[in-house]
Length: 211
Image (cartoon, rainbow, N blue to C red):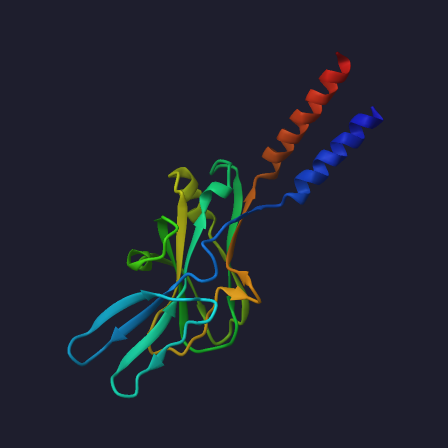
């Protein structure tokens, strides 16, 4: 009996220790540099792949033309790291880092299914949240439970998010890293499901002992 209680305690400790699953991202060097021309020959927007480790989202007005550069972090996460069902997810959070205060508003977009490759088509998405660049410094945590559940239900191989300024004239700085720690998504499975798996293992041990 004492051995069973001790084993159950060990199982419960293991369940509590495995608080969540961190999804693998494509890396800290993924993102796009967006060039937006508001006047001149014709307004347009172009994209090129950039490096988020060395570059931050920094809206800068060109002195010669009313143009703006903006670095747009594109974050894609590998859904194969999570092996459970959508119903078993109790929470999922996206974490990005803002090194310095700026001005204006930062939008967070959900890009849906992705392929793990950052390219022109990675830019789009539906805004799911925004935060004030002037008051948000440090790690910013966003609830993305619904989006991750959708990704699991639809068997997405990768899921994408885009960090984008609402206005290209805003002076903002956003990075998806801090001292080498990249943006992350943490998926928290339902504790009851994990505990049942643990109790099932305990029952198996007891049956073997009885035999």
